[in-house]
Structure formats: C-alpha cells, structure tokens
Length: 269
Image 1 (tube, one colour):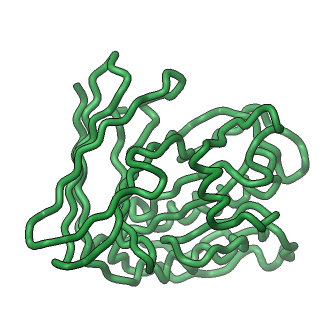
Image 2 (cartoon, helix red, strand yellow; image 1 turned 90 degrees about the vertical axis):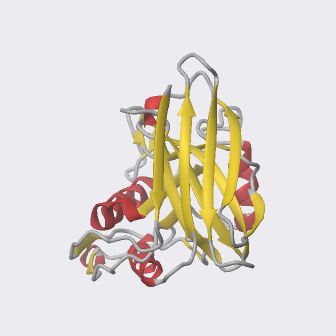
C-alpha cells in the first residue's frame, strides 16, 4: 500500500523569478515583439488553480500549455494546473473524443457554451480569459490574496485494487460556507495534438490532464465550524490510466472563487 500525505497552510512561499515568456493570444494575433513581458513575482499567500479548457484540435493550445509551464517554473508548487479537454476543439472528431470527458463537457456547457475560441482559462475560478499572455499577471494577483482555508489529504492505493481511498481534512473560519471538490489528473500522456503550424503531432506529451471527478462534478457543500472538517472518498480507477503519473487535486471554492487548492500524487514515483 502506498500512502501519501500532504498538508498546505494558507501562507506558502512563491519561487523567485523575474522573466516570463508569454506568447500569442488564443483567438487573436499578437505581434512577435509583444511576446516577452516582465511580471514581478508575488509572494504567495495561497496556492492557485489554473483550469485550462483545452483541446487536441486547438492549434494555440500547445502555446497556452507552454505558458502554464513557464508560470509553474516561476512559482513552483504554488501553481496547480488542470487541463480540461472539452469545447469545439476538444475531441479529435465526432467519433473520437480523445481526452475529453463527460464532466469536462458539463463544465464547458456551464461556462462557455457560446464560446468558439480555445484555449480559455479560469484562474482560481475568476473571470474567464482566452488571452493567455495575461495568465501570469492574473496568477500573480491571486497569489497576493490571503485565505483562511487549509486543506490536508491522504491517498491510499493498494496495487491490484481498482480504486483509491482518499481522506481529506479542511479548516476555515467558523461559519464559512463553501464547496470542496476532488479530481483525478494524469501527466505524461502521449497523444495526438494539433500544433500551431497546423500539423498533427502524434507524440505530443499532454500534462495534468483532467481524468475524472471524485465527488461529483461540483463537489459537496461544507459548513465550517470550530472542529476540523473531515471527508472520505472512494473512487474507481480506469485500467488505461498510469497511476504513477496521477494526482488527486482537491480545492475549496465558493461564489467568489477558489480559496485553496492542493494536489497529492497517487503513488511514489
């Protein structure tokens, strides 16, 4: 049995850096001389969730993925990204949905049903933006905010057993109402991707791909009291998933956005 325990306090530390390579906007042209901008790193008071609504037929999505990689290089483990394959460019064809999921389709319908361009992202469940040259500045602003929410989690996996057991804890100011959400993601998936030059790359490596929800598409309600809140979930595993590349992502959110997020590896690498 492999057990991983992670606990994050609301006051973390951002990685230092100064230069971030930012690139073309998803649905509009950006001149080459505008691709480099300076974003001063913020001192992180929380972790930040980037929900990247992407697709295998989206020509600008590889550039957005690289932008996220640069942001993660800058701020380290304070940035947790999830690539949700969905939308008009999400699937490979009408008969092959590729990395798309039913939950991903639900998220797209809830937020972007009339949107035709991809990629588009939500930073800590804030306003959506398809201009990924601005993602780093939005992340920097989110990192400056404080939160009273803490999350801890333990993932238990027994080899040969087709499910995970996840135990989580969370604490916040008494009386706070929110929702807690748990997802499964997978890294290092080699699959087809349409590239910015219009070609298809069959060896493209997809990172932090959304695989499934653990406790429903919108999570479950939590009302914080004086005692630490506890949660226990069991979730099935697909035989095609590589567990050594997987994480459990857990976040607490309310109408204002994501208050805290952590990710826990399923197995020791």
